[in-house]
Length: 136
Image 1: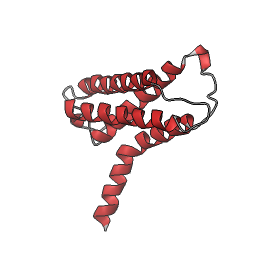
Image 2: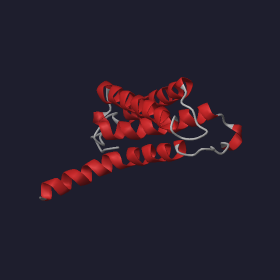
Image 3: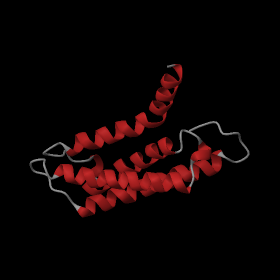
Image 4: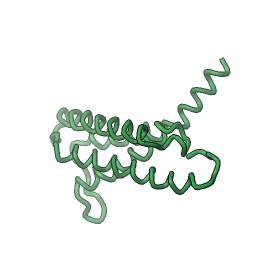
């Protein structure tokens, strides 16, 4: 039983931030009227930023919380998962009064996830320079 508890704690440590971001995206998508973003940012910028954060956080999960796990495979897994979540988010919006799904929003989601992955991969290059794997 102790092994199950340890595995669950590790999974939560790695994935809880990404799941929280997904919940925040879902909550925002559930609003019939979306408040204006600060600084006059566009809706597309909001999608981009939200999914950049999701991409970075999901990369942590796929990399199992280790800088050494940040590689092309975990990057592709993150982009695919984030992009598919974007599809489900747009589908979800089709059921919210006053909201409509948009392919352009989904493109901003996917591009944001790619940037999040790229940022984590760049950080991993610096973190891995001559150091033991200390975790993300």
